[in-house]
Length: 432
Ligand code: 7RM
Figure 1 (spheres, protein in one colour):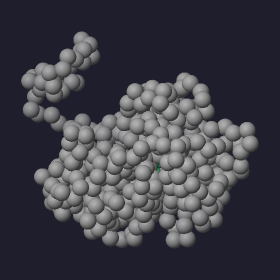
Figure 2 (spheres, helix red, strand yellow; figure 1 turned 120 degrees about the horizontal axis):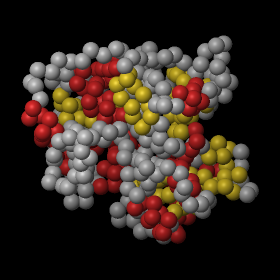
Figure 3 (tube, protein in one colour; figure 1 turned 60 degrees about the horizontal axis):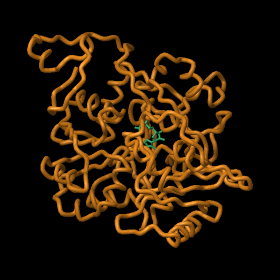
Figure 4 (cartoon, protein in one colour; figure 1 turned 90 degrees about the vertical axis):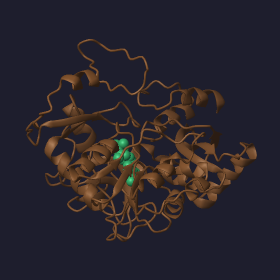
């Protein structure tokens, strides 16, 4: 079904494509709901494809609706009087769960917005918050870093005092961005609800409950009630506090994916066989590395395939990126490895600079030194490349897999169908 929004030319395939307004004209006003079985398929959604060929994640009717309902209600404390705004693309799982299904089943007022900030209108999101009196605002760290880059005078010149709760999702939030979000957008009065979850999990798995869970910048805090999460080694043994390991879920939950569409084998291999089953119990492996601190708080370190091994030291790419972004000249950074004959792997950083900064060799040296100061000599990037933009998916995730190929001097052969802006790759090939 195609909704006519603009006068653009659309290629319609007869028999397959229909205009909404044609169907609407003859539709009966009486449309009883179709009874569904709780395990009937609800939708197939393809994963963001940061790590390889996208997988068709299958969600079902009962469990998914129950879980998106409960998580939105408890983690965002949503009230009938609230105006709630999730800025995600509706095509992403966050849009499905927390723009459409969760808000609808809660009878919430969900604001939907089609635009994006542009150089011609950098304050447009804050205009929307002011105009509609948004109370709950949910966005991604990559967006927050873009807001920082555009300058705090945009939000500061709007009245954002109706906001009472802020959410984040999509990647670990670097403390720099957390503090800016809390101070500039939240006026230091809004709790920040950092929600860790996946297309595969359907809804929030790790999240604070506002008012009940004290937060720590950069941690998605604790499992949602009923979720049994753990950090284990490859044999399924829990690792000690503050040791890195694999983030797993030990018990089923209502909105877990049911299979990879058309490929049950891939489903089993990817999610259920990575960690060895223990006493007949299987672990759901999320693909992320994490550690748990002495208070039981989870710190997600990123995808395990993004971990770099320099001379026998395991470094999370997120850690190094966070160190780079804490330098005032840096807007965003993506860190990958490239093979190195001596160290095994070497650190390569792709860096975008704040508006007024000039790329120079001197700045490269300064940034390398900055990483050494923040983390240690072992994390010192062997190479820094300045770039105007980083390759991202539509949901704002950096496609490190592509950068890794570029850093290693190879041509990109894998799947690039989920790339948001294809011209970024050409620029990276040419400019860097
Ligand atoms: C909702 C969504 C899933 C991957 C996941 C993580 C990363 C998401 C957080 C996070 C740290 C968070 N679905 N991720 N949220 N990492 N803190 N709060 O993002 O399927 O597109 O991606 O995103 O690596 O495995 S997704």
